[in-house]
Length: 352
Image (cartoon, rainbow, N blue to C red; front, side, top):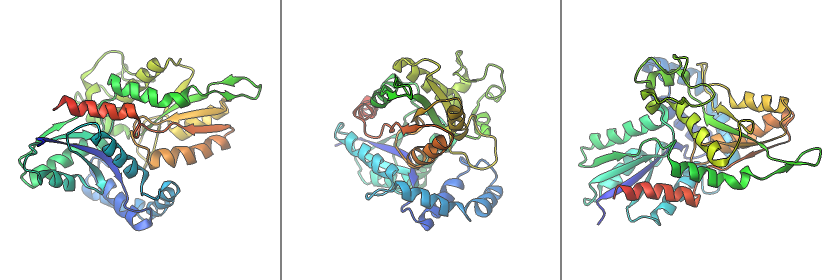
């Protein structure tokens, strides 16, 4: 009998693409203090007065454009990853969502039904450290175990943004798109420009996560367009350093030069100062510079979801074409690519 279970955790999705389930999902998500880092009352006022009156309807319409017969793409792909992983390992695999269903608490309780299981290996499916993804998920699994006084040890997979096997899987899954040439107007074949679009974060999240309280966004040698060459203790929790490092390693592995790619940040919410540049503005600037064909890769996500399938593949394409571009193609997330399944299976086997 197994003595350990693996619990995969992704962000989550509404139960349906209609307005009320979306409203409930957004309320749970945005009221998390690790997402909107403000005192409860101020957070409640912002969510209730400025977000929930309109955004659920708009978001429901967005979800409808990518919803499948099986449900939310993020849930569907996550379940497929769980099933593919289970075929690779003997350890029982469970899947939870930080927001929505199945909840982390429900899956912890499901694991606890087996008296033989003494340990949970918790894998937050986010390559890069952030309070609004990794930290809140870890807090929730710890809360669930403590709330029910469960005799379960907890081991946690750390952010994997720079692990060689992850980078290799990312490049391998992208290769069929990355080196597909398009015909330019003068009948020459050329590679499309590659845009790395990472999920954005408010700059305040970076300074809060900086253990030193004196480096991120404060030092002259803080990450600019490239990852810091010198290691700092702040890098352990620095989202921007980590996404830049993922980019650097990907570009190096794929053999790209500095003129073949750009980095930007998507999915902004509210009026706080967010990481720059924005994906939307970058797409417009690329078109204005004469770039005709763009590939977009979203390495902050391992699973295709609303932010990739609707925000990039639909709205992003509209923005780029309206600005004068010719084509925008989304490179799918890792989803259930065999190399990615092998990566996660490797993590699982190492703890056995």
